[in-house]
Length: 240
Image (cartoon, rainbow, N blue to C red; front, side, top):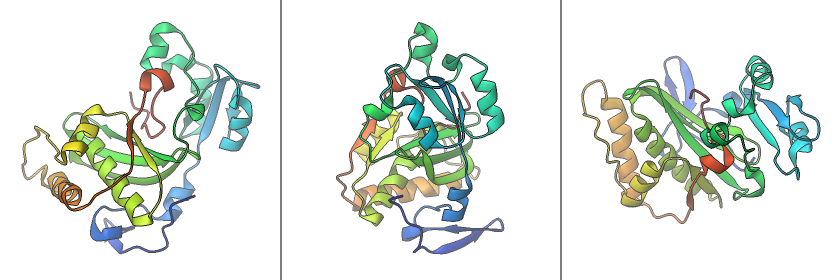
């Protein structure tokens, strides 16, 4: 994996130890990232079924036109999905038209991070994360804290930019949020959320993110994820 967690500042919060490069955002330790396991459902491919590793899944879909597949966080979710229509899980356009999604692995920039956010209510408990596309392995995960989905999408992109610059990596960023991408270009989080004692924590992060954008230059491409064509972004939390 291109990202190493060997050097970092260690911070304790709520009884857990996190790493925080730059004194900016909080990063999950590598042990937590590596512990996550995914299950892959292949609805259309060489041998449809459920696979417990990306390498096995890839054998079933690589080079197969119209291959339909998706990763899940647990075996139970994967089994439930496999017994259902794939279009329940992998994109609004596919659900409406019944057409298989394009295989994003043959179309996106391969060395890339995908970022996404989720919010229970808007505003409400918000979290965001990034996954490394070649492996779909989680790279960082922050939250929950009180905010909005758009703020989470914005923070996720800045978090990814800071990490990529720190590592000196040549990596593209994909986001499915036009709003967040626009805010990055303006170097300003133009949220309408009111700053209150309940939202102060997320606004402190927004302040730091805006300060980082104002004081750093980057050449990292930030591209819009084509949800209609490729389905949900791999960093999606699967709560739709």
